[in-house]
Image 1 (cartoon, rainbow, N blue to C red):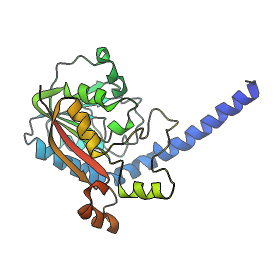
Image 2: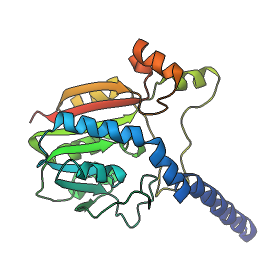
Image 3: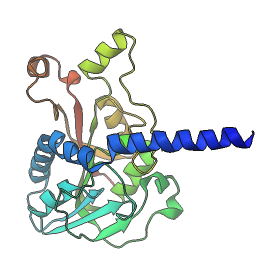
Length: 251
């Protein structure tokens, strides 16, 4: 490959990364993220309080975000796990959140496929919130589910929320030959969705990991004012935009 084309390729990639950063990771995009996800945060917190009442419970939030701050308003012992906050560029991280320091376990969940790389910690948690994250991983979901469930107490709950792969809007896009799933991003520091799941798939994944299913639900976290969504959510639950599953250990 000649030097001129290499230079062209580098400049093109740099320009594309800058455009993607502006769309997904700029302050403006992060502020919009908070607005778009406000209802999701509120509803996810309500699920947490439904499953674990004790405000003294030890809670682990996967990925630091504004939601972590909301959790800390309900529970007195909140930890986080995920990428080093210094390098984490996820759209959920924002100067607008007023985040405070939490005990943090630095671990890239994509490394959960190698059990020898699991962090050796003595902490065990009564509630682990695995919200809107599993779809961003490039590994089979069983790896991260098994790792996180190893951090639960004997009566602990692993709460998983993730986008529904078969919502009404996605089905319609398929009918019109449009791909409803985003392309793989150039910014690996803020990856998009690699794989979305159906409710049956998510339940099956937990069952394969020898977890018991304590709660399953589909819910609309987004576009609450959509007239069509208000109708469809009561007619066909499988059309709703988000999956909610609560797992518990059986071993």
